[in-house]
Image (tube, rainbow, N blue to C red):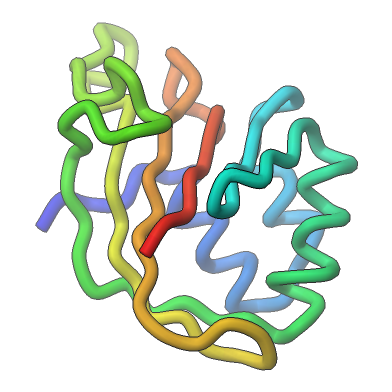
Length: 126
C-alpha cells in the first residue's frame, strides 16, 4: 500500500475531525471536486459542497487501500513522478465512508499540484 500524500492525508483527517477550514486548505485555490460528474471548483464551491455533503453530514473516512494512480479518469498523467516531490502526483484511495449521508465503499482519485503541496483534483466514484 502506498502512503497517503500529505495533502490527501490532511483532507481525510480534516473531514474526520469535522474541520472545514483544514479540509478546504488541502486544495489548491482553483482545486476541483468531481463528485460523480458534478464539479465544484475553488475554495468557496468546495466549502459549500462539504457543508452539504461531507463535513456537514458528519461524514467519516476509513482508508482501506492506497495506490499510485495509473491514468485513472480525472488524474491524467498523475502517475508520473514529479522531480520536485520525488513521488507520484496522483493517488487512488479506497475508503469506507460513514456518517449521515452516503455510507459504503468509495474510490477517490486525487491529482496533486506539480509541487505536491495541494490537491488539484479529487474525483469520487464507486
